[in-house]
Image 1 (cartoon, one colour):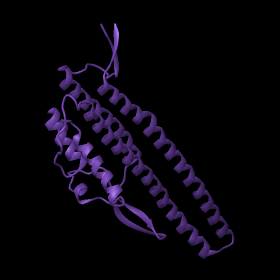
Image 2 (cartoon, helix red, strand yellow; image 1 turned 90 degrees about the vertical axis):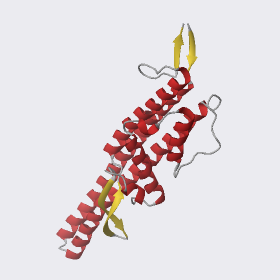
Image 3 (cartoon, helix red, strand yellow; image 1 turned 135 degrees about the vertical axis):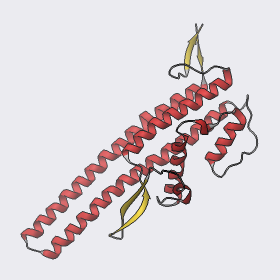
Image 4 (cartoon, one colour; image 1 turned 90 degrees about the horizontal axis):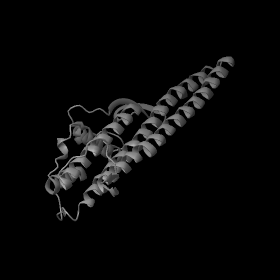
Length: 237
């Protein structure tokens, strides 16, 4: 028996490792630390409120109550930023992985000089279709992949406010009407919110999407789709 290495399956293993051993623990650690920060600030504000009550200082009491309300909004904003960072990382990782998978097949399926598309995702869809006859939009949850990319665009290029492209989605999941702190005032606005639940659902979806893409490319290369879990290396007789 001899050991062979499948670079396509190897890229899937690396992608899965990045999800499970980088993205997940970093995001969980951030959530725990942010909850600790909020708890400490809230405790300090409640202490200030109690002191104002004891001193019968109505103006101070009201000011500390206002700060407490703002702190609740700040806590949500911290969690939103944590979610945004995770969102940007996940889309960047997906972009890198789809590009790396393409490059593995450069010799057998050489790329053209240019592929049309409004965005990197559209260009990638066209390239996979033309080079490999793999239609990424055939994936059952590709709408979620596209929404993820459009949400990332809103975060990176529009301060977290939804873009026109994002608002055109039939059922946007990451859109929320919420209060944001602006110069110690609270203002309601529509914003992209990538919650902890969204994060976990996205890990599962991206794992399955890249698994599907790799299986399609292995089929293209060898005429047979893998059965069972993908492995970068396997023993053959």
